[in-house]
Length: 470
RNA sequence: GGCGCGAUGGCCGAGAGGUUAGGCACGGGUCUGCAAAACCUGGUACACCGGUUCAAUUCCGGUUCGCGCCUCCA
Image (cartoon, rainbow, N blue to C red; front, side):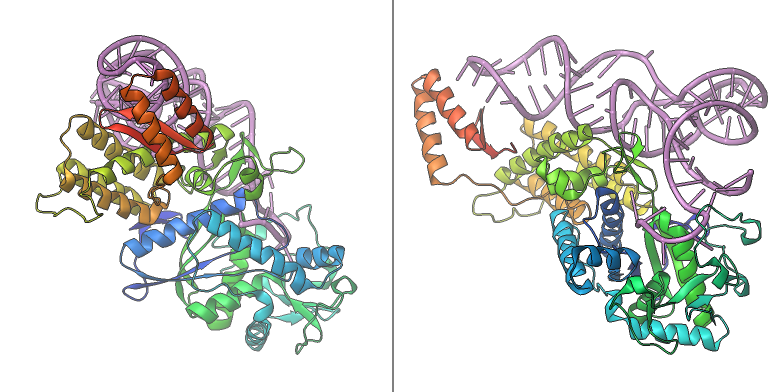
């Protein structure tokens, strides 16, 4: 499998550190609000990556942190007038609900920062012991960037040439250098009762330290893959590397992957533009999780994705087409659900689609190209169905390939919606009306069923129904 | 100011130095009581200006526009 490694800025062949297994660290949410669809683009990309790695036969250990203590969570809890843990618990839950809505697989570990403060303190101690930490006047502890020669290598930033940005920290004078970042923050009045004891007094961990500490705890001091949104590239990931490698003296991460941002109608999402959507906003507009999932995987992860409502509508239509194809294939299988014997070999057009799909996914997760392969299969299946040249064995082969594609895409195969007894009774009445050529009655019943969410179609083999999205 | 990404037909979005991406939407046709689906078929995209080349939308240079990062934003 080929992946683009941000560190080298080039496509590389993925080779795990240990044969057969992958350690994957994925930067997770700060649980202080509802995540928006831009956030979910990153988690979707990571889900696709994870599924592709598994499909390649690798055993994946994925870790995703939950940042439940930082400026924003503390402020949110204060404003809500509730304890920090209570405040963040709510958003942790909605985050997991959203993951389920999008069909994102669960990671093996979701460590919360507040559960790992001892590990972070230990890491800061190691840094201190090696001379990579210093205390400021107020008791905070900083990382001296100037001491770490490789700083800026991931982001390709020349630290010497950096111009002081507009965002100059208020406590700048307490740091030796503007570029230094906090490992431990001394307690401040705004922190209220959010504080832990440490060798440097009461306070809380800096933001970056959690990812270094927790990734190494669950994946070891060197591991394979670390991912996140492109905006995490600097400073967050740069700082993670500095902390980890300065403390251990070992290479931290072998491959870094970053996904591009999502735009809305060609503009970045922002509250002032009114194009800031959470997953919940879209569900309220009547869109479904798998339709949004489809949109999020319809562009290659390193390209900026333009989200439009037209695109979600297109996703719905596209998926209905695939659903119909799958349903027709299922009807071709022998009754009783037993799969047909596979004596006849897989037809070339089925194997070709599968090969094209796999090649696309192995090429740095080229999901649009993979979808094109999927539609090749849909189209050829429909052609063969129309020509009457698709028997149970072929149907079985196609379904098997759809299932293998869907282990990665997660949008194709759904449980069948079968009509219940009352729907079946109406269908029987309509059939009788049709035999009698009572078209008026027939159309009335069709309208009634449509009102109940069932679309009826007349085919040479008789009536067919499918559950239709409103 | 520094670093980086991008501009493809109505919309989304791949791609490669010369050969149909794909999906959605739209037009025509087949089928059909009607409707739907499916199939067949149609539109002649590659921001602009130069350059390299037999050939560039694809490579190089420049221009314009959009987006991102430059110290806690996926």
